[in-house]
Image 1 (spheres, rainbow, N blue to C red):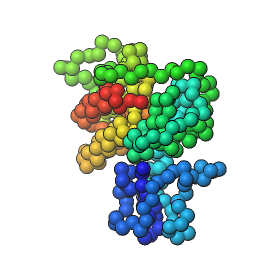
Image 2 (cartoon, rainbow, N blue to C red):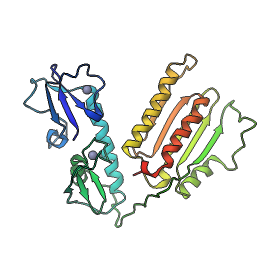
Image 3 (spheres, helix red, strand yellow):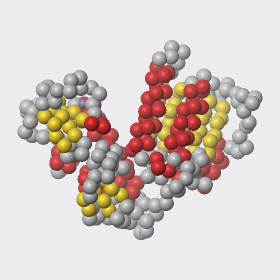
Image 4 (cartoon, rainbow, N blue to C red):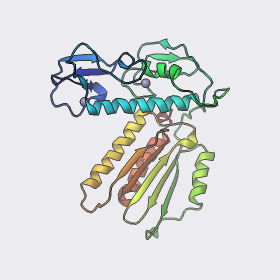
Length: 283
Ligand SMILES: [Zn+2]
Ligand SMILES: [Zn+2]
């Protein structure tokens, strides 16, 4: 179960895997299991703190609150995605021994709710939200989910040059257009990884929508760590005069790292391709 701790300054922080980087001391006056459902206002859905320990001004630390909001938006998207692919509703979740991190929202050591039809084990908050959250417009009548392959799936790779950037002489030109390459990835249910060299800078895109799956929270964390590495690297380089933008799309299928150096873009694309190729990173 994820945990939370109260500091003498009346701020609640997350502990353990989601541990806060902004709390200086480890002097927690109180630690609790982070029971999200118990702390959620039944009507408004807002997240509160336990009422007993701490003064009347006890609140969540701003950064930890962001971490929780991230979990919640991942949950929202994962459930929407699931409901658009399966007919099962009003699930009678079974409580089982904890099966690790929640695959939907990513909450640490909290997956205790299992369902046979869905074949998923998720945290209590995700289980509750599945039954009580919004539905999709046209729920499917059959289970549309695609079986995950057991072996790695080679991504379709594409590198192209725009503006004054030119392809090196020793690099073979692609035999198809960019649109065709994208379409081929979807047709062949493979990930797609693209490098766009714009001159001084380059952009990298990695997309697994064509596989019919999305990245697991663990894979997204790994991707975000790689993106953070790229940011730190360019921030430290005075020759980099632009801003590195990174994002992982809300559907959990599309990743972008924008305005890095071409020499960094190629290995970064290789790293993303390795993650995308591995079906254990899909859900
Ligand atoms: Zn915190
Ligand atoms: Zn969850």
